[in-house]
Length: 162
Image 1 (tube, rainbow, N blue to C red):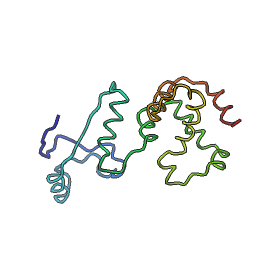
Image 2: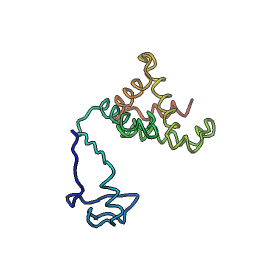
Image 3: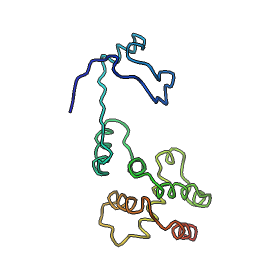
Image 4: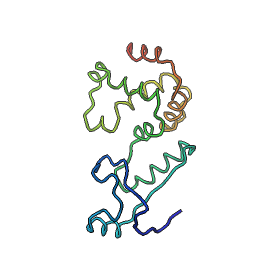
């Protein structure tokens, strides 16, 4: 649903990480220059319910990021499917020997490509027979299936041995 809303004092800025000095401010507290910018710029907000499916969340992220820098699949997975398994994948991606054998640049690490390699290792080694030509869906299902319950000991040993 779209609505045109005029700036007012109904909303208060909270939890700002980039501009923490503005926490607690309302529209009328802002300097006139910022007020004028808000009057002339559209502000789009999308609120998803907690029970919104992963597919819908990912589709929304794709649509939102069409005109900006594209969000990579590993970032979407981490955002939508965080949990113990993804923390385990992150820990494996930080492994010293893995980083020595698979050197990855800092900009690539920021996009979580190192975690993507580790995830692919586990997904294909465990479920390669169920792969059906859609890597993103295959990896998403693997993460979803292992999100909270997985054999960490077995996977750790397999990762180390490989």
